[in-house]
Amino acid sequence: MNRTEFIVVTAVVLLAAFALGWFTYWLLHRFLRVTDSDMGELDRMAAALHEAEDLRDQAITYVQEREAELTNQLVQTEAELAAAMEGLRDARAEAAALRARLQGSRATGS
Image (cartoon, rainbow, N blue to C red; front, side, top):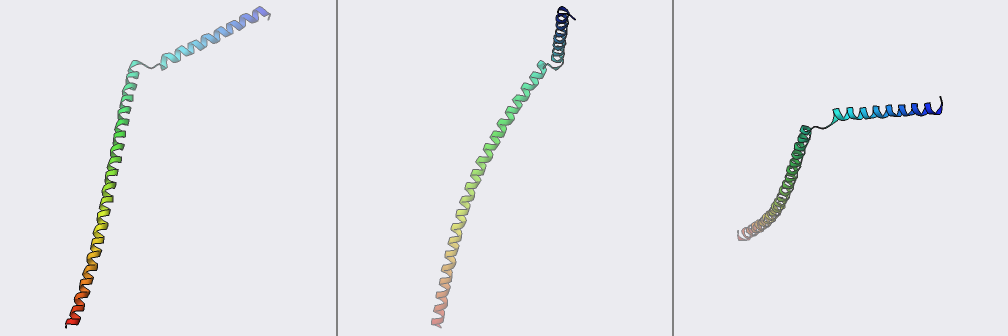
């Protein structure tokens, strides 16, 4: 095989490889391309996803606000309970003191 034949064979092989590559690209592009209806559906899905994310964010915000409100109510209720318990403790102490005075006056009076 001389130099000219080698160049011709190489050119034919390269041309065949190029043609095969181009045909493969065209075939894949033909079967795998995205149609307008698919793009419309993707757009609708993206819009629905954004709406769902917005709703999720609103729900998270509501839950956080509600949790803060309930925590505040719990703290207030615990403070009221502590005050009531302290008042009850004072009332019991006063009742015990009055009982003791009453018992003392009965013992000295009888």
